[in-house]
Each structure stands twice: as structure tokens, then as C-alpha cells.
Image 1 (tube, rainbow, N blue to C red):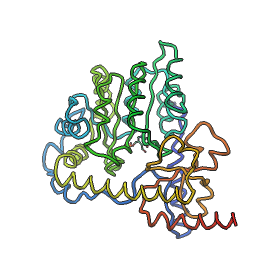
Image 2: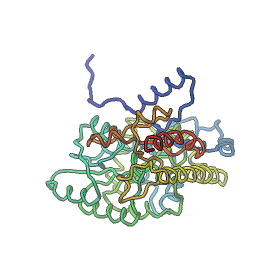
Image 3: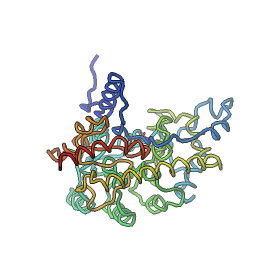
Image 4: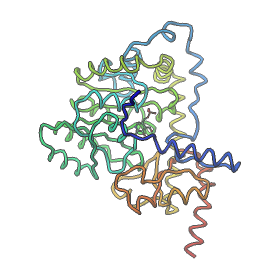
Amino acid sequence: MDINKSGATFSSIVGIGVKLKKRSEEQKQEYLFLNRGVNAVCPIDLKEVVCKIDFNTPRIQVYPPNKGMPELRKAISEEYFGGLSDPDQISIVPGGMPAIDLTIQTLKLDKLYFADYFWGSYAKVAKIRGIETAHYSSPADLIRKIKAEPPERKVAVLICDPNNPVGDKMDDDNLVQWIRALNSLGAAVLFDSPYRRIYCGKEDPLFRQISALENVIILESFSKSMGLSGQRIGFIHSMNAEFNEELNIRILYSVNGVNAFAQELIYLLLTTEEGRKAVQNFRKKTAEEIGKNIAWLKEQGLLAKQLYTKNKPVGIFAVVNKSEEELLNYRIGSVSMNYFTSLKTSETASMSRICVSVPHETFVRFFAPVLSRVLEAQA
Ligand SMILES: Cc1ncc(COP(=O)(O)O)c(C=O)c1O
């Protein structure tokens, strides 16, 4: 049996998590797992919503429609696009990772750009699909690079804002202007920003502003903004009919539709009073604790300041000026910035990404000893 090896490696972040869990069990000591990319302030409280689901119906028990339940796609259009988007331009997919993979396999692509500091999975998915990758250091740098590409080269960019791993966020007006400029240059813009909706809701105009642009594809996940990574559900929006048609075929022959229970759950969260309240409470509590943790890191001089000169940190990640090994001494799990860039230097090795979406009190309890050791060293 011959294996079609992609050359991609398994996620190092998953490996770090396994190692930390083992250490915690062996030492019988509590660790703070800030290496993960999940909101851990509180779970979303689904009690009032799950009881509304009738499991004894074909709607739950039989194959769901290939691109998702029509009612769910309509509810997404209302919630995310102010009702202005045709639900046929929305396809339900099993989360953000498959959204990226399905999109890049559907597009004819020679090169995929993403930021200098990027979520490692971007590079892995591109590797598996045999697509060349390249990086940009700023919005202006990307525009310059795309203008310099030969016209026959098909390029795309993945935009993550707020960013994973840095946790910074561009000003929205600049973001929209940049996306419009990229769209005009003919680059496919894959807007992959699953952390954005933790901080805003239906009032957010962004998707309305960019969804009618012909080269923009919006990839969205309910993993982060609703705390439902276990449900494996998200969506892809594109106004390009040819893209949607091919995507529909690829969804059929790769996943054959998304779990009906997950679809029903999201539908109820978007359309019932109890559901909306559950989402709102989850986001409010999560955003509050994230805000406190970032403010505290800033006050204590623990943020890697050099990464926040242009944009402000908003979470759910932040980069601190301590290495993965240093933080491990204080039983704090983190991920070295070397895993998030191809520009590996001694500086990137001295910084690490932490998830700041944890209760503030626990966060300070674990970080205070780091600080007293820093003060001791300075004295
Ligand atoms: C930037 C980014 N995009 C997409 C995803 C994928 O999320 P999921 O597959 O859980 O929906 C993640 C998860 O960590 C992410 O950080």
C-alpha cells in the first residue's frame, strides 16, 4: 500500500497540549492551559435551547440538505448580512478548518498569501493542496506584492482579524478599504476571522460591506464566537455563482452535509429569544474577562509591545515577552511564537502566544509569580 504523503506535519500545538496534560497528571498540579485556542471563561449555557429540539423528526434523523438547512441559511443571512444576502450564497460547512480547505481546493490558485504571523494550519492546508505560500508584513506590503505578481498568476489572501496568533485588530474602515483594494486587484480575499463576532453582534456592518465584492469569500465558524467548537459547524459565503456551484459538489463528495443536530442548534441560537440570550451572555462574559486580562498584561509590561505598534490587542490571543519554557516554570501552557512565523529569530523564540480567554482571577493567580520573579531579577 503506497501512501500519498502531503509533507504536512501534525499540529505542534496539539502535541504541546498532550505534553502539558501528562505533566499536570504526573505532578498532580494544576496547570493553566493558555496554549489552546478555545474560550474558557465560561461555557455557553444551552439548557433553555436544547430542550426545544425534537430528536424524533426526519429533520434531525435524515440527511440534511447538502448546503445546509434553508431556514438556517436564511437566519444567517439575517444575523450576519442584515438580510441582504441571498441564502443561496451561503453554504453550511463543518467548521472553519474545512471552510478553508474546501475554499482553496475549489479555487484555481497558484499562491496563497497570509500575514508574517499566522495560524500554522494555513500553511498545512496549503501544503496538502499543493499550493505555494507567501507572506506579507502589512496591508501596504501585500498590495505591493500582489501588484508585482504576473497577471496570469492566480493569488488569494487569507485575512484573520482579530489575528491568530497576535490578537491585534485593524481599524474597521482601513480593513474595508484594504479588502476593496485587494478585490479590485483580482486577488481572492478569504476573510477568515472567527474571533470577530465574540466582540460584536447583528449590528456589525462588516459582512454587508464586503459580501457583494466579487472576489471576497467569507469563511465563518461558530466554534469561537459561540463556544461551540465541538459541534463542527460554520459557513462559507460567496456571491460568485460558479464558485458556489463547484463548492456544492465538493461538499457532497467530501462531507455529504453537516450534522443536522448542529444545524438545528445554531438555528435556535440565532432565532429564539432564549438562544439569542445564551449567545449574548456567553459573549459578554467572555469579552469582559479578555479585556481585563489584556489590560493587566499591558499594565504589568508583559505584552510583547513591538507587535502592537500599529493595531491594538483585543484577544482572544495575546503575545507576551516570555518564552514557552519560562512560562512552563510557572505551570502556564503557551506556544512559542516560532510556531507562528517563518521568520524564526531569537526574538520570536523569546515570545509566546497565550490565550487570554480565561477568568481574570485565575489568570492573575498564575501570572503574579512570573511578575515577582521579574521584579526580583531587576532588583
Ligand atoms: C484563524 C482561525 N481560523 C479558523 C479556525 C478553525 O476553527 P474551527 O475549525 O474550529 O471552526 C481557527 C481555529 O483555531 C482559527 O484560529
